Image (cartoon, rainbow, N blue to C red):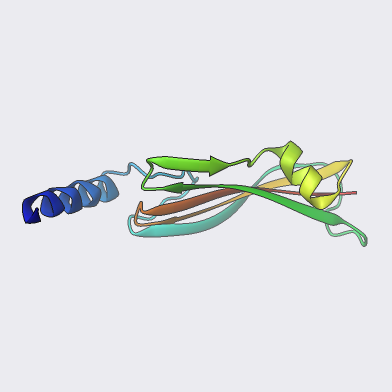
Length: 107
């Protein structure tokens, strides 16, 4: 039993230092990351009355994943019909838990 735990811990450790991150981001940290980046902008996202919608998916150990991080889901969550900005954010902690989100802003 102790041998299995040691092998499991070693495999998880090796995954963490090889760059095999469970959530892809433009910049990755070995122990973890929390980043946000933009993909699409059409118009002013700082205008008064702008709505924001967010849709996320999560993963555990890179083995189990769930969620809907589509632009369609983010639009529905924010009550948005016309998108002006699409951003993404991702969090990863030592390849144990990860989260990837799509954030849209518009009217």
